[in-house]
Structures are given as C-alpha cells and as structure tokens.
Length: 309
Image (tube, rainbow, N blue to C red; front, side, top):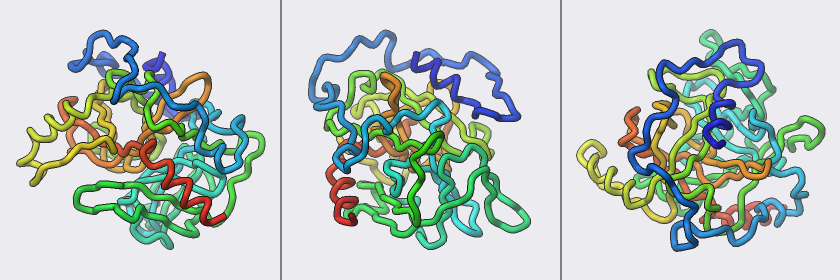
C-alpha cells in the first residue's frame, strides 16, 4: 500500500507531463525480503503517543496532517538571484521546518507554500511559481548545528505572515510526539519524500517529485558510509539522531531535496519523522541518504515556537 501511495503521488496533480518507468519500478530489496511487524525494542518501539506536536501549541488535531497526496504542506525554498533550492514543510500556519544548511541569508529567501510547479527564470534570474511567494521574518537554527559533521541540521523559518487555514488551504503536517517511531516507519519499511531537486539524470525538476525510500538500520548505514570514507574525506558518524534510507526505484533524494520531509501516512494522516540532510550524490542503492530524526527534536521545536508567542 505504501508503494502504491508513493507511485500515485509521483506525478503532480494537474501536471501536463506523465512519468513512465523505463524498467520495473521496484528493485528487489538487498536488505530485507519479508519484514515482520517489529517487536518493541530500542530501535523499533511503538509510539509513546499518537498526538501531534502541534496540539501542544493549541492547534486542532483535526486540521493537522490531513492533506491529500499532493501534500499541500510542502514548501519550495529558494533565494533571490540564486539557483540553489531546498524543500521544507509547513508545521504551523506561521512556521516551516527545514534543514539548517538550507539557511544562508534569511532576508533573501523565497518560500512557495503548497507549490507544485516552480521554475527558474533565466531572464530575471528569479523564480516563478504557481503560488505567490512568502518571506522569512526570522530564521532559527539549532544552536549546536555543526557545518562540518551536519549534526543537529535543523532550522525553523518563521514566515512574514500566517497561512490561512480555510477550505483547501495548506494543512500543516503532523510531527508525532513519541520519541520512538511507529512500527510502519521502522527499519525495512518504506517512507515517502518529495522535493524539486535533481533527478537520476542530474537535471533539476521544476515540478514536485515524489520518491519511495526504504529505511535501513543505523548499523548498515554506518558500514556503508565507512566504505566511502576515502571518497567522503573523513568518517561520517551515524547516531540515533539520524534516519538512513536507500532508493528502491533509482530516484533518490539528490541535490535540491535537502530539508524535505521523510514521512509516512497512516489512517489518513501524514506524519513527518525526518529531514533530508545529505547523501553522496550517487544513484546506486548501495549508498544511503542520511536524514535528521525529527522526533529527537520535538522539545527544541516546541520551546522555540512557544518562546515567540
């Protein structure tokens, strides 16, 4: 079912183009064959609670994470006069969650909330989207963010206005409060991601692209990163603050997908558990993409939002 949901969201709604697989859409997994529902343990425990972080901010739980497959909580992040791009997620009507390394100069950032198509204008040097851009009032980067190790790679962007919560307006994605992940998001299962980054051929996408990724263990992730130590010019340390995934279709979270959500859908609600941080720029399923484990940072998110309200 997760694969079907991911495939059905691969092409944006109202898109003029259609995606056709050149081969089997799913490759045989090299990490698992059949994955039983995990028993509660240190790595794969049942959620402490199904409540969303946003309910601790006074938001109505009925309006959180209920977006359709076009994921209206998605945010295209760009800079004036620059071609670099990232992704983010609307988590409240005033805040977007993204990776810290996506924040360079907040005053020059353009945020397209609930966009499907955003393209770079070669004449003006700017971007044109199918929604009006919003701007950043304040950027809050984790105080322990390390630009070398990419540890604590998380940031909050406070918008210059509030996104209207009416009708078909963007709906914030749910951040589960439990420190442990739901079994359906555990090792061996699939997670979804989207963004406007490079595709498998190295070309940027102007339309939102969906991916289905398989979660792998931290131990396997560390071993594969260690095998790339020479190429990476140093040892990458994987910890419980990370989530690792590999591609099962060939398309992965390449450059430009940074800050995008690693998520799953359950009972009609979208849950965000990771932020895309970094990879090694290869399309092979041997090389993981490392994401930040958002559920390790719920207190940090709550504290920073509550201090400002």
